[in-house]
Image (tube, rainbow, N blue to C red; front, top):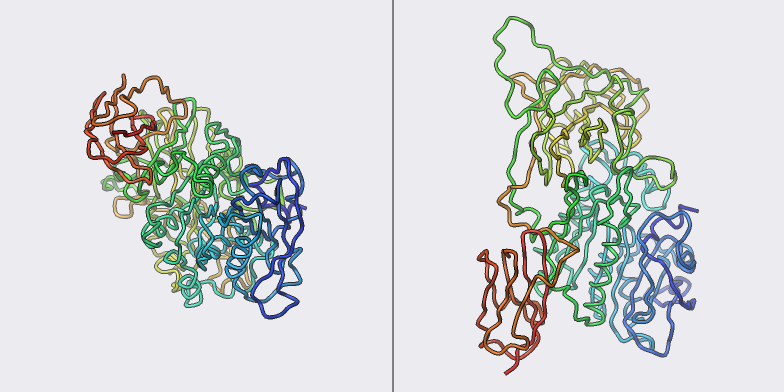
Length: 638
């Protein structure tokens, strides 16, 4: 049953009544014109905003009240007091199976559904969309068609691009992930494997799936550090923030939490708990929808563009929410950690070899018939609930094998606030013409647990370019450069930062047969002897982005003591006085549509604004401290 309900993780239906309906679309064939849907409403005579959910996972499962058994995910209540809901089966799926039409643009279906909804007596003409993964992709496709009555969209855990990197990592087939997508009815594995390099086929698909410039509504994006592609969702947000319609370019927001794709907004992720990350996607989603669909006087428009979670040992003050306006422009510095011959990661490069003692690189014996197992990380297999996902301890499962090289920093004497994308430069050689090199990043706790944070892999034949295969010359030293997904994790004092280097990570990634022959064809399976070099001439290393301590990123504190903040008079006429017992870093005043009308960046415990030029009306004060944000409302009267 999990196959059919896997992505219905956002809904927890409370008291409701549902009405099966058929929604007409523009297709010319009468037999394929109607899509099967359910209307959820507590009063169909009362026009309300409508939230639309388009699903390939059987709308009937939304009829099950409360928690649906077997689902790990956040619950989003059907608020039928303020909203009506429409849940539609995708064309070609379940109730809409008979409407199947090959290669039909489902965005057109979304357009037709929304405009039909807007003309119903139970609709007030405002429609928002909601959902994650496949339910997020169709929101991008629908919004790109620009239906006039679509007001806002919340596409979670999904990027709008379709591209080579969705199915290959460093030229290595994402085996488990892509085969799971095929079982769910989304892709054809044989077609994907017929294009193993980034050729014109992939370039065409990627270019034609860039919808960012067609978006004319506000969007809320959400991802997790253990999601499939957090870096892609970050890039999608950046694209929307630069290329969407000028009227909404500053309205989009992004949330990045410590979550897996399959357990968004849940406290427990793998073997760790993140209590201050529970229900965040739902709470923010509700505020987002209320602001745009109900005209709620909440502070949504004043929220930072990006809220993200800096993970870390919670016993040492880790696991905090931070904010930013632009992920790329967060103040970072880049530290280089070099591999040395004691299997340590050090800030100084290996010294020149002065003695006549020969230099010995480290060796991985890679037998494709006994690959290094995938444990945790951003693994995706919704058909096996027993597999370990997310943050897991690798010390007794991966790191105790003889096919792994483990490189660690010494025990840290101060925190390392890793924030961004790690780059790796490995100097390698092999006795075979092709092989793989994979890296897993872990946070080593004082008790020895080595908790995986993210992973990556690179196929040697694609070391210079993903669209050109160049086999290795056995025995020759070469370099491989690749990156891991963006991550935000504080490695605390007493911990260690570690990378595990292997030549496989199965079944997350395909196994290299090491024979240098045509990819993904049956052939000889060869054991490879792979070497990692770390001399002064061949200095394998990782480049680590860390937060600059001078950054002005503000922490989000959910336990603000509002009694600590004073502002007067309210109503105000010519001046407004703001004070606190703690230093604040910025105080800004916004009008009702979110424009800044006054701002003060001087660190202080009080400030006075002259507001005699402000029109009569309602205004917001945003006060940013070093570890919290507070919002106040005041009136200007004459």
